[in-house]
Image (tube, rainbow, N blue to C red; front, side):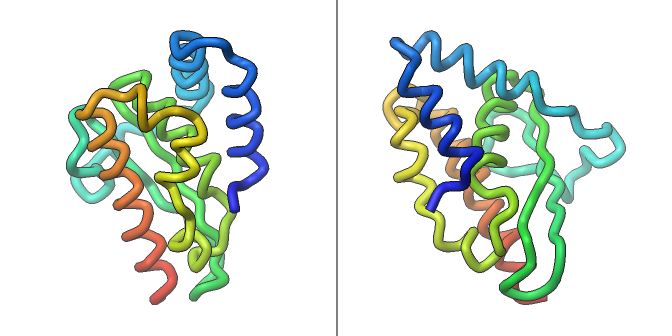
Length: 142
């Protein structure tokens, strides 16, 4: 159920020989994302439960279950920016009803993230996924 963008990341990860190369790739994905404007880095867009500072700004196109989900994100940590880029690839463009059906844990395990992130980063990643689900649920109900 992964998007084409996420499949591209998964394919790249298959070609990288070790976790250090994958780690560098995650950081590069984060560097490629445009930063959020400081004006939107407010408590309402902050993701709680992350060791780093993380902000998500949802962009919903349409209404109800068929509305398309997207978001912009930012963090003060480069590896976390990369994780945000991976989540964008996993979720962006999906109808909000499908966002709620994505097995994020399973999809991210394909990248080996479940085995190579610290417990703090793993907790933060779960918090970001939880926030995406909350945003999609709210959009679906709108």
